[in-house]
Length: 209
Image (cartoon, rainbow, N blue to C red; front, side, top):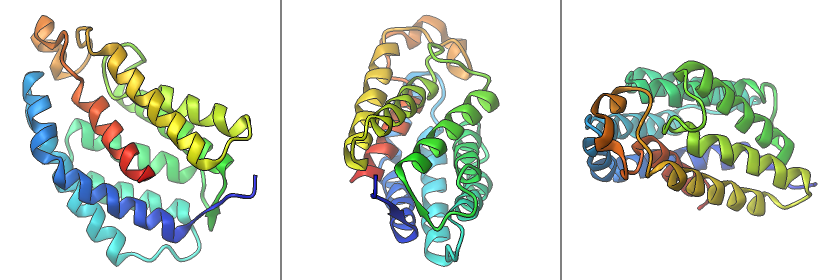
């Protein structure tokens, strides 16, 4: 596959995600409040602002991987909540998978996705089915890799990943949260959209815009 993603496209995607996280603050907060917490939208809005500032002020130079790692550190500094830490981990692990790259192929992006998935599972101590962000991230990473392996375009692979993320989110919505603060409120989480899953869907959809 000859398609590649340039460093400029990576920077633009991070800027779009940052802006969308700010725009979705109230919505993500409302979802989080239903699960017994309520700070997710505020945290991600802070991270969104930090990512926009980082992207505007920091040149990629000749290493997209290192740049993404630094973006992860900026995210962690801005929003040091549990989800903020997971988002930072995803950026840093994903960046590490493509250290030294000046453009990204479909295989590179699949490697980033897989590394982010593994890192978030490890850091968050969650697995598919626990009703966390993993239930959107993990199937998305798998779907993207499968599409790339099948020779599909980056756009097609991205759309497959988004569809898988949305299906994963919907599949756990009827369930009870098993991990984190949401698990404390037990049956009240049944039938509620997991805010971490939705936040990931929002970010992925924005990347593909």
